[in-house]
Amino acid sequence: MSILDRLTEDMKQAMKSGEKERLGTIRLLRGQIKDTSIYQQKELSEEEEIAVLTNAAKKRRESIDAFKTAGRNDLVEKESYELEIIQSYLPEQIGPEELEKIVDAAIRESGAQTIKDLGKVMPVLMAKVKGRADGKLTSQLVKNKLGM
Image 1 (cartoon, helix red, strand yellow):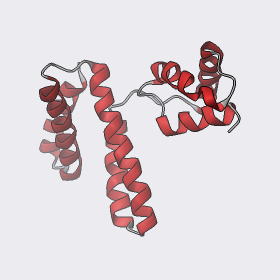
Image 2 (cartoon, rainbow, N blue to C red):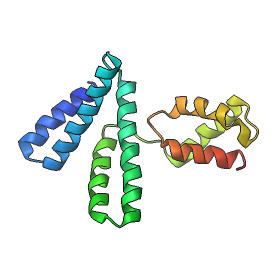
Image 3 (cartoon, rainbow, N blue to C red):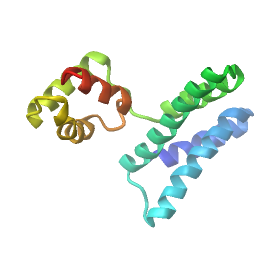
Image 4 (cartoon, one colour):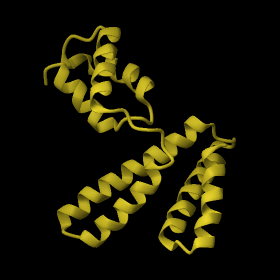
């Protein structure tokens, strides 16, 4: 079952149970997937659907940080709830220890020695962790390992 199909089923359940906030978030996610599909003029693969949801999750994290800075706890709570729903459709995230092993392997595989080789490591690494690890965290880990 594709992510879009799961979202459709969950949308029906949210309607029946009267979960307005959940329903709104699911509708938004379905819309983003459909918009991307229309823009690309094709049905999205599961990997492409995951990319859309990963982007939506990234936007929520950025919003949460901005709202915390502005002291808008009501909006932090709303965005956190939406992020939780989005994450329920994404693959399970890689743990810190496993991510570190994957980063080490990607550095070895790309032959990177210094921070100047970051551009060699990231494509190799992101292909391995796509959708299962936060890109910002992953990039920071690589930078630390390469001596920045």
